[in-house]
Length: 414
Image (cartoon, rainbow, N blue to C red; front, side, top):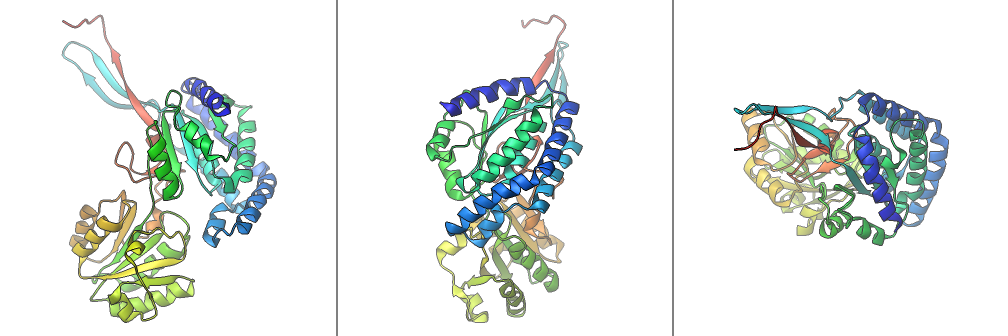
């Protein structure tokens, strides 16, 4: 019953929020950013409770990293809000104009989606990121984080909602579901009368659960099985640096490299060099038979390994004959998230770009750039591996729909 009341209040607030000016929305974001900084000690104290509980529950080091907040990360959260202030308001843009022979003028105009429900795990910074993106784009937000971050999420939410009291944005436009009972999520997913879009962020299990049970449209991102293909035409030193960054810079996130493909002509030279650096960073290597002939102590990769999103310091390696085999492998085992090629050959790069069916495809760069901030979109609600209605990092524009505004001078249809 509590969730139903929250959904009703959010729906009402969304109608009011659609009328709030860009200036007033930006002022609210500034107030929220300042409030985060002012309350950083409170947030860190509450976050410590979640970290302690996570360690006792045996969460991996990568998961603990995703969960951890410190002064630097809280400042990054506040800076993310201020970055969104700088972005152009996505609402009210005239996307197209049509003038009909009968004199009707039709404008296609961007509008807020309405009420956006975000269901997420682990990373408490999602609470502030999604709140800011939804409010800037004129949407009410209903947030439901995971139990592992409950103290952090409640603290951040309280700080943000208190800040809204001094702004023109209705406080009810921001809602947090504090219950960690999964039955509450099921209840939420049936409220298509009040909620317009669901965005799940987390592991594959959560996203499949949401997609299978929701009556509301869902933007999905099942998992990030990201690949890097090192061509025989690559600068191998560049390839080393890219692969190392893609795997170890932050292994517990969805845009980290999980699989490395290497052309057979350079495998004997490249693999010992890159594996030495990867192992120095704590990475466990699993490989196909061709890889294990070069890296003799690599674990044998199973079929399941090629589909697996580890979110940890584990990497599966395969030796391939050419770019065509690399593309086919990625399209078979990947998750349509982010995949990269390292090559000095333009034609080969174009083959990879056109052939790989993923939201983000890279040439000579790390997959770690698949991120709203890095793309200049501000914070992101999530990264969509769907093709409708948004794909890749879902920023402000992805949180809008459109309507047709039709101007006449007395026309009637014959």
